[in-house]
Length: 247
Length: 217
Image (tube, rainbow over the protein chains, first blue to last red):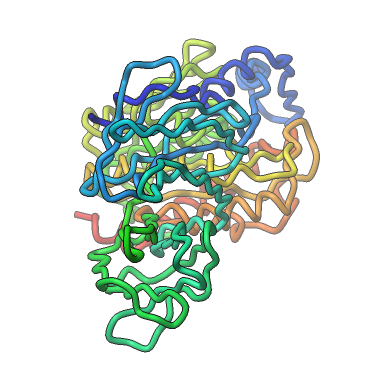
């Protein structure tokens, strides 16, 4: 199912829509040009400019959903029949814009197992809801991020560790003695900017290399990505996801 | 500056309220650019943000100038989707003059996520057309006024744009004057002398950009 089908969450209306309302609702203060020498027609036109906002009433907020299990699952939103399938090939949704502080409710479902989602997102926050399983029960972890590193000239790479068996997680650049991330606690994330170069990374749990190296591929400057460390039945695996926002 | 430095370049120039009145930036800039040989289509939309140029949004006022006099619009003014404008005009350079409408001068917290989303949405849309673009950042105003413009935030806004408008090339208008040097009528909009100075500086800066020099026929 396409992302566009997931029109299940509160519309993010705090930007253009609210701005438009504000434009009409705010008092129409007039520009008074006292500039000597301006033609009367200019003065007349200038007086017609209403006051407009120079930004939104609240920053944008986003939520996405990630399948951190080894099997496919379905995501539904409360009050909707629409479903999004998340599997190993496509484990994440895009970041959907949502209204800050609104209730986000839905459900992960995998066979007979279900995990009800209920969260809110702060203004300026990017929230990731990550489905996990302990082998029998489906659950989820919610991690929020308020990034301040927006930069079109660099790659922004986050590292999420939601594997309870991988303490002090790290990512090492394969073939080089360089750590991209170190000592990341369970159910936390960290982010940094890197140059748009082609690299592979190796997960370390503590100082122990764990699982196979992951090729990150051609990362594009200006784009944002995340590497997720998720538990499996026997170990921890990592995968890469784009942090793309729904347009 | 020698005449004809922009000869052969078809420009689509989009902006906010600064481009929406004859005594503002619209006419001085249009005239400066055309004097240098550019063919210009300039559109102003009061209060429009970057994201507003991805769709049609009603704005309280605006202006449009293309091969003739400026058409000033009241509440009939709208933005237009950038891809439609580019498809129609087929410019070989897009110039965005935008910053004040996204700076949240009256808010202690700068809306980073919202600004990033709008800016990158617009630059990516332009990039899909493979049209080179230049983004002109905000100029110093005078602190206070009804828009609460202030030096600290306008400096932050310019820095944010500089980091986020790629692949567009950034022109930093803060380098054109000192804070408060250009008198304003309301803290944000300049008097005619200020707009003439801003226009002359933008024109000169455009002409010196390698991306623009590469377009000259």
